[in-house]
Length: 494
Image (cartoon, rainbow, N blue to C red; front, side):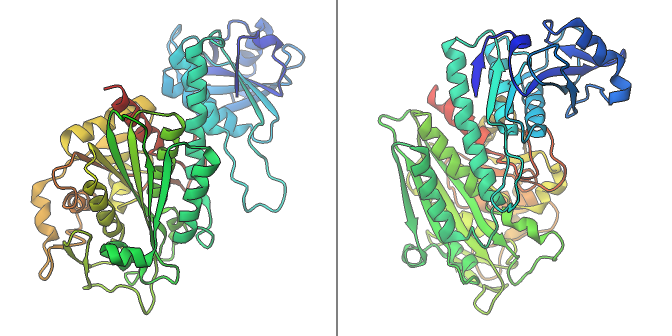
C-alpha cells in the first residue's frame, strides 16, 4: 500500500474507488468534488437501473469510459449521510474494506475516499488492508487473490504522521490476517503441536525482535501441574501444548499478560456436540491465535510495554482415554474442578493459563476465548462481550471503541457463583443454564486473584458463517487483535 497526493482523475489503476451516500433524493458521490460532472450525473441518472443506492456494504462498478485514467469506477456505499457531512472513521473503514473485498483478482486499486485528516487516512488504510484478504491454501484451481497494489489518495501523503499511520495499519492488518489464516486452517493440519510450530514461525517470519517462544509439551505440563490442559487434551491422539510468547522491551512502561483459548478442534468430548455446525469448531482456537499475533504486532511496533501471551492448546476429542463427566482435575496452583460437562472445556485450559499468567505479576491480564454459546445468544454474531474488574473492563471497551470493534460490557453477578458449587471439588465447570456467559466469567475469575483482569468472549464474532460484510470475510475474522493492540498502545502512553 502507498499514499499519494496525485490527482485522482490521472491516477492509473484497474479500479478507482469513491464513496456514495444514500439520501431521500437518491445516491450522491461523497468527498469527490474532482469527479467529472458527467460521471456524477450518470450515477444519479442510472441509479435505479444499476441498483445504486449508497447503502452500507453496497459495491457497484461502472466503466470509466475514458473520463478518468482508471479502467473502472467502483462505488462503495457509506449509508445515509446528511449533506455536507463526512463519514465517521468506522464507516470509512467498512466502506474501504467492502470495496477491496469485492475487488479480489484486481491488479491495482486506487482508493479515493475522504482522507483529509489523519483519522480518515488511518481508517481508509486499515479498512482497505483488512478487506484485501483471501484464503487460498486449499484451492487447487486459480483463485482470485487480494489486489497486489493499493494506493490511498490523500493530501496528507507526505506527512510523517500519515506515513507512520500507514506503517501501523500494515502491521495491524498482517496480524489480523495471521489470525484469519490460523482459524481457517483445517484441524487435521492445525493441531496443538502444529500450532506451537506456527507460533515459532510467526515470530520468525515477522522479524519480531525481543520475542521469545517457549513450548511446554505433555510431559512438561504434567510436571508443572497443568491439569486443565492435560484433562481436556487426554482424549486426543495429538497431545496438548502450552505456548508462552514473550515480548520484553527494555524499561517497559507496563506489563500486560494475554491468555488465549486454543482448542484446535472441539467435538465436545464425551459430552459430544450435535453434528450440525460442528465443522465450525475448528475456530475454537481463535483466542489463542489473536493472542499470538497481538504479541507479534506489539513487538513489530516496538511498543514500550512488556507483553506475554499464553496459548492454551488442546484438541477436545471423545475416546477411551478422554475425560469423563464427574472426573476431577487439579488446576495449576492446586484448585480442583469437577468436570460435569466435557464440552465446557475452554474454561479448564484457560484456568491453567490464567494461573500461570498471574504468577508473573503483570499489571493487567486479558483473556480472550470463543468460550460460550450463551455469548452468541445474548449479543449475536457481531458483538463480543467483556467482563472483569471494573477498571479493566472499561479499559477494554474504550480500546474497542478506538479500534472500531464492538465489545459490550457485561456483569459478573455474585449470586450466580452458587451454581458452580461442586459436591466433591472446589468448583464445578458448569453452573445453571441461564446466564451461562456470565457463569463462565465467574469461573475464570476464581483463577486471577486480585490481579486486574478482563475476560473477552468472542464466541460469535470470531467466525463468520454467513455472508461477508465490510472488511470482514467469511470464516475467521481476526476479532480482538485491534482491541488488544489499542489497549497496549494506550498503556504505553499512560
